[in-house]
Image (cartoon, rainbow, N blue to C red):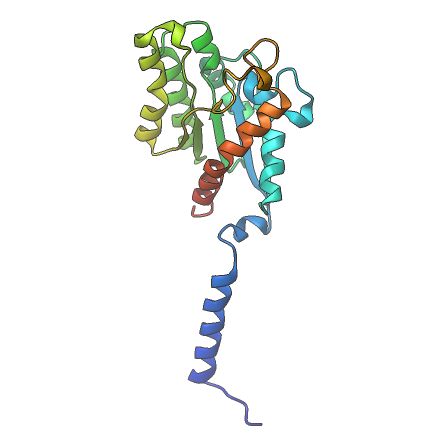
Length: 220
């Protein structure tokens, strides 16, 4: 049989490449080579207060992402009791070089203590600015103020997350505790921190947004 060469084979190889691209999952490049290294920077809601280590948000999130085919590591940089300002203070050693992206969940303790919303706003904005300067993308997980703090406080606090996300063009998950806050069966006896089941619900709800965030990392 006569061997084909020249322009004919060039066309064949080009067509094969197109077909291969069509059948590869959108996140396949993230499942090859080095893992995507994420850091979950937060307070006790991230750290997994009152729960075994394997039930903490970063661990459950990593497990859920791996189940969907992502080659990813999610480091737990949650510290119980941290305010947004405390998160800013420890940012440089909490987020090591080589980090591909950071999920920021901070501000709940500021709100629970009635701290003026301008304080966590400035701190979270500072976290984003500092990470941007290091070339590390940020996903922001928002919080909502307790309604008993008053409408004025709630408006100022709640708006800081979408405002910062818009300013820096960040991927935003509006409310970290969506589906869990106020549900007695999904929280520990303190009514604030989620149970293991509560964390699973948080992860299930935030997962599509995290996938959206990872997709932006693959385009860098």
